[in-house]
Image (cartoon, rainbow, N blue to C red; front, top):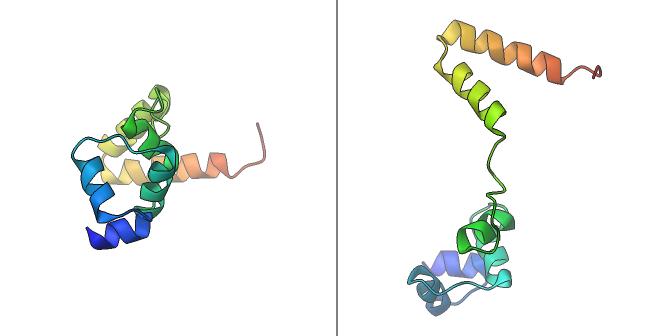
Length: 92
C-alpha cells in the first residue's frame, strides 16, 4: 500500500480512508489514476463523479468484438486482418 500511496501522491492514511468508503476528491482521483496507469475519467466514474463509463464501448462495436472473439481461430484472425485493413485505408 505504501508504494501505491507514494505513486498516487497520497498518504497511506488517505488511501485507507478511500478504501473504507471515503469519497476521493478530484485531485486524489487523478493521483490514483496516475498510480495505476488508467485514465482519470475511469477513476472519477468509479468514484461517482461521472454518470457514464468513459471506457464503455458502443454496443454495436461490443457485439462485433464479441462475435469475432467467439469465432474459430482461423476466422477470428481473418476478421481481425479485414478490420485492420479497413481501418488503415484513407477511404470513408
